[in-house]
Every structure is written in structure tokens, then in C-alpha cells.
Length: 425
Image 1 (spheres, rainbow, N blue to C red):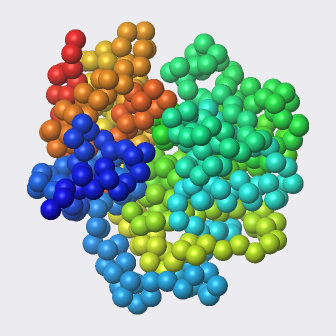
Image 2: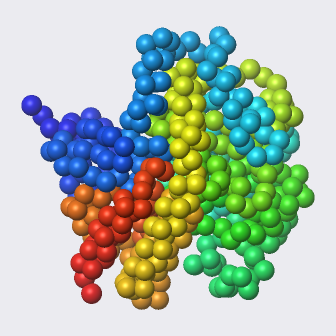
């Protein structure tokens, strides 16, 4: 019988990469653990790229999904879907500000596509501002929005997108130091609009914490400066919560709530349905109503994904997981800061809640992606799964399920300690 690795080589696009020198095949998950096809157990501190929010195969979510799959799987949006209406109502209740009406799709890419088109329809303007180091998805539009060369296959496909400086304080593009910088990165948006656009913009799309970009975390005042500038020139603020939403950043349900700014449009995916395919775009009613023509998503809003999302939200609320992410995330962060004191290779620890980035460097902040690869192999051997990212591929991304404990965090910290201790000097 042919191995999975052999089938991958012959039948899967080679662009679909995998972690580790010898990629792992996962066959089972339960709670915070995954098991590979050799029976090895792993503590999952990446959660399928911030998607397993309440743990693998959470009993309540799984029960509801199975029950729905045995009742009705699909009709498409040409018929009314009760589960879709119920979830849309819940999103309107939970999201900040006047966000009201939702369009459901299958992924964060589709959610962001919907948001950009909606902003253009509402404003009648074509130009959009995105952030350098940001990531918006894998379609041609989403890749054009993305400010990260590795994820822009084929170059820029869609015109009219302008990339602003991002709030990357550790590597400030202006050579300044926060807080004595007057938030130059945000202030620069005005000159960008006045010099690189027609003077009007449809939207500004940004992640509260840049996910693929390496968990770059904006200063608390950033959006309070940036968003009014965008609105001054007619634009809407699209908040991409694909990675930061649903309690991930700790203490709040959404990342943007830490910044005191209300979006005009928000997008979700990943952790909303704990692993089932989903995308959602929610907007103020008058913005949603500006889409006059017909549209459809064959699988968007399907009863199974809607049920999974509703169940996931209820578990997050019932188990108070946003609070747990804050408490355990603080404990984990303090442990990582202690490791930073110990190991010069840790340049910065950043993030919020259970969305923590560790930038790995050599002297003078030189990115060290080779060291990240070594850390990956060492942590895998010890049964810990983590992610990586950043423009230089030198950032560890640590994002366990929201219901982990301090004891779980201590196990991960111990393994990371050993991994850093084993790096070449």
C-alpha cells in the first residue's frame, strides 16, 4: 500500500507545504491533544492555525454537529435556513457598534472578498488601503491585499490597493520608539491617501493583530488615530477578525474591542466554528443594503457549519473562555518573558491572550528563521505543536485552544525552554 507521503508527492499541488523535515500525519484529536499515525501524542499549541478554539472534537459541538448532519446537511441559500438566521441574529447581538447584517461564506478569504466588494459598492470608490505584513487570504484579490511577498503568488492581480506602514514597533519603519513616536505609522496614512490615491478611499482593512505577519500587535492608540483618517477621506473600516475573534485575544470577544474603535464591517472564519468551514462578513445595515444585485454562496450558511458555530459560541460563553484566555495567556506570556531573559535568541514576546508571538533573532535583531526550524524539530520531538510566521519566517506563533490550563502552559514552557537551551551558540 502506498504511503500518505507518496500520495502527496504524486497527487497534491506541491505548493501545499507541511511543517517539519518529516511531515506529520494526524489521525485523531481530542481536547488539547492530537495523535499522529504512529500513535504519538502531541499537545496542540497551534490549534489548526487558530481554528480549534474550544478543543478538538469538543463533546457538545460534536454532538450538535452530528445531530444536524443526521437531520439536514444542505439546501443552499435559495431556501431559507433557520440555523443561518439564528446565527446571524447572534452575531448582531455580540459584535460591537451598529453591525447588523451578515453574509455567510466558507472561509476568511471569501469573507474578506465580500467585505471589500461591499465597501466599494457602498462608497462608489475603488481604492483600498491595506497594511504591510498583513494577510487577507489566497484568492487573487486577497493576495493583492496581502502585504507579504511569500503569499502573493503571481504578483499583484488587482489594482487600486495601497499598502500603508504597519505598527511593527519592534522593527519600526521610521526608526522611532514607541511611545515617543507620535504613532507615525498611523499618521502616515494621510499622506499615503493624498499622494497614492485619488483622494478618496473605499476602505481600510486591517487585523487587530497581524496573524501570518507574525502576531504584530498594534499599540493601544493605533486604531484611534488610523480609523478617523480613513473616515475623513470617505473610507470604511474593515476589521479582519479571522484570527483574533471569538475570545482569542483574552478578556474580550473580539480583538478590536481592546482598541476602543467600532468597525463598519467585520470578517470572521477559523475559530468561529471550531474547525468546520465557515466565513462571515457582518456590516452596518445601510452598508449591507447597498448590495442591490443578487448573490449566492452554495455552501455558505449551510446548516452543519451554522450549527457548529452556534455551539462553539455557546461553549465559549458558558465556559467563560475569553476570560480563561486572558488569565492563562498572561501566565504563558510571563513564562515566555522569563525565557527571553534567559535566551538572547528571543527578541520580542508580543500578542494578547492566547495569541502570542515570539520573534527569534540573532545579534542586532537579525531574523533567525533557521533557529525557528531547529526549535520546531525539538518541540515536535517533545510532543508540542506550535506555528511559525512573519515576513522573515522567524516568529513562533503560540495559539492553543482557549480552554487550556496553566498546567498545560507550564508543560509547553518547559519544552520551549529545552528547545532554546539546545540551540547552537
